[in-house]
Image (cartoon, rainbow, N blue to C red; front, side):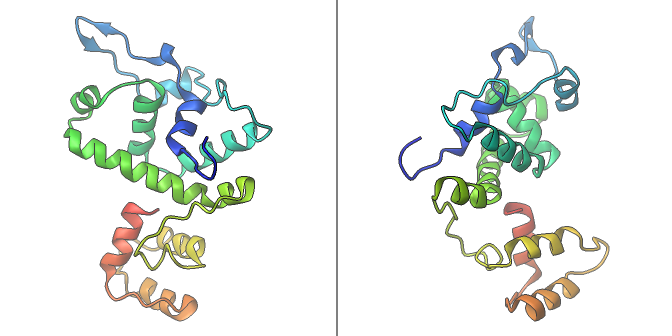
Length: 188
């Protein structure tokens, strides 16, 4: 880890890469290992972490919590890409997604991990890892409270009540629901 720089992808790999998890080929076809099968088989991300630091357990715990906040598809991508070493071509065949969509998903995952781990990184290493973004919610001091509000909203109703509450309680001007939708999709 370079001075004043955190490489989040390395943390993901360090806590869980296991070459024994790599899918075996049978007649050039890969066996399917789902996320549930990995967990049921006793897969323990973090057992091979090689960071020379007294913060090893704290890093493992923080990264696991950040990964747990991701969607099931994003978690599956992490297990297959980072832990099992599968490449985009293989993942594309298995998931029926285009390679460019998988690449975009990977970038989104790293952004989400940076957001979810920024407080931990600042506390443990004194590095301000906040990403500069145009999102008014991400730039807010009430980031976590607004995320909780968005995630607990009634999905059957419009965004009007959420927008009004954000403007009233947190003094953030939200002009369109697309700001909240984009934040929910890409930043949470």
